Length: 125
Length: 247
Image: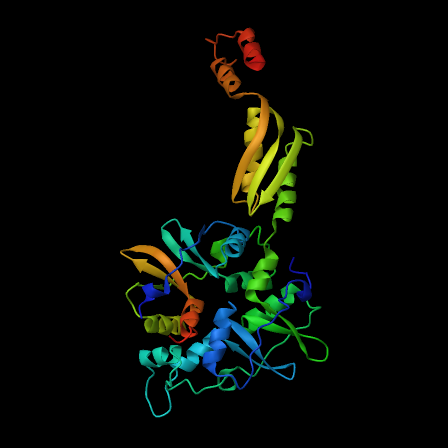
């Protein structure tokens, strides 16, 4: 099974200079677990629920602190024709729950560990 | 917001797993309920917790007598067939060191524990240890987000910076992050400024500006610029300005 068959969802993005509050609102409104962060030179990282919990744990003011201070700087990508098994291996290797799907140099979607588990839990035909 | 007690942000209806369930059944229930993990319960008390990563790890782990798992395992598993891993139960894969939290603790405390232990959710238990809810990272993120009512107050406060009565009958309503502002401003520039302030309020996605204005002062600025008093060649006709104000 290929990554594209997981129907990667469209990527929600924020700017690296946005305050964390903006990312929080996006996560809640779009019901996603992570947003891609764009900097001056394209993708700068990923900000996930976990990064936001880290900011809350640090008791920072999310209306003052910017996304780049808490984002995960490595955004791991995968190609849509790679296998789901490969995606699982990458996620466990990098300890991340989200992968950006990259096609012809552009980011075309995002998959999460949840998408994979949903496939595993599907009803038998 | 981080000082709110857990009981106000936790999920009350918890998806529970039972130790003897198969992983297949468990992952189906996790997926169907849209959750990524759940506590394992025996006689109302939490004895373990299962997350997506536990399920994935179980699948990735080499089966007994084999050196690697293959994609075939996953398909077999997904199809409910007898794959090399499909005989496993929830008890086999769960983490049995569970950290729980009391409903009276703060959101901040829950965030600190999750971060320190690198976990995604905490079962909430009463003083007798019985499961009464669960608090997840998503719940904490939601607690930090403002709802439309709070945004309305923020936008209102941002615009009032312009002065209490600068905009007559100011009304602000926010729906899904879209702020609608209405009222009557003296000048067009005041109306534009109010829009800018509203759109800068964190959480506001878009502003629908329905503020009306008494006169358009954009032209006046131009006239004044053309009639710069420092400019010796100025051609100052006070009546032009009066016309501008009077439209």
